[in-house]
Image (cartoon, rainbow, N blue to C red):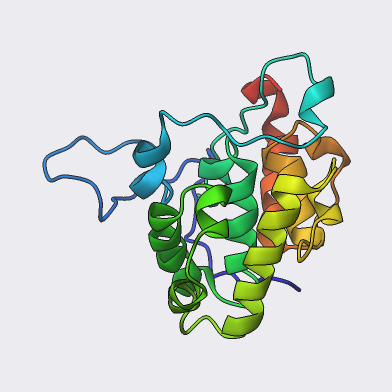
Length: 206
């Protein structure tokens, strides 16, 4: 398995999850779902155009696929609009728990929100950004080479890019493009997300 996510919080039968967020101000009405971790930096990039260089998008005439919010609060649900950031998240989540990786990812994307930023980054700073995640040198190498491929390689699916395996490719197909019906994830949480879509497809209007 490429990921070792933290255990999920229990959910009720209506597939809704009520919880508070450390980023939520006091006396603010709770929503019916968790504040997504990606909201920490989502506002920082909300006015930027989504980075979509895959040839997939050149042949897509319909509106962009917006993956429904699930009870599982996956980081991919916040990053669907920016495939590069989503795939960076999958690199951070490889062979490490989400509890450890996600805070590091927040900091990374605040400092380097675009692939062009990473190409100009000091390798020592990149190394510090993945400290304590394990395989730090390999992870930085993957981030750099993947980013170069993302920008300059003629690609359609991210599995064609350096360092992106089935987990990253499945994440892209589930969250960035409307191919969730054709994906058979190995990752536990991606499988749960697909099953949730399948069970609720009519209600969600997808």
